[in-house]
Amino acid sequence: MSPIILRPADFAAAAAQLIIDHARAAIAERGLFRLALSGGNTPRAVHAQLVRLGAELPWNRVQITFGDERCVPPEHADSNFGMARETLLNAVAIPAGNVFRIRGELAPEDAAREYEDKLAAFASRLREPRYVHDLVLLGLGEDGHTASLFPGSPALDETVRNVVATTGPKPPPQRVTMTFPLLNAARHVAFLVTGAGKHPLVEEIVAGGSAHPAGRVQPENGAVTWLVG
Image (tube, rainbow, N blue to C red; front, side, top):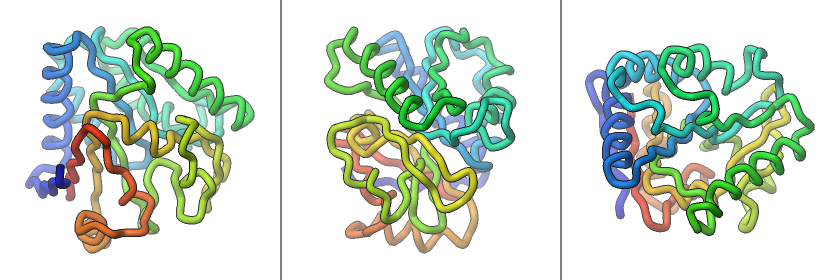
């Protein structure tokens, strides 16, 4: 299925509505909505709209994971989990046990293995070869990276593991990230991209043949939507 580009007038509200629509469909069909959150600053406004527009969602049927994490404690300003907790998780009625966080305070490889094992255990109960997200939210860096899959990283070539330790070019360098095999097992991936400077990069990736890491997010049995603001 070819990627879709949407350029909504209200980026944050449209992104939140997309999440809500996927949540309602997944819960109606399977009883659970599995959502992977992204880091960075773009999701902040989206989370605020999700809290506002999604107040009636059955949050007890939502399961949260994280596409990547910086190797810092959850209270650290750079923690993706910390940002999500502040802007979304503390504002909705989601049970703590439904939030699968990457423990960034651990050694990177230990955190990656622990997270991989946790997702694998849940997938095994559903007889899935890999954990299947209903919706994965991803960002896009100016260098074409997504999650913590950076150009030139050995993590780009991972074909077996679902979560690995890696490093990034900006502090804090130690990261834990989902890999392409796990991202491409999702039913739907939505890239949330803001900033006019990234528009040509989005067009290049969507046109195909891009060498950028984000261009390798191609779900085997799912779809990709680009929300561009």
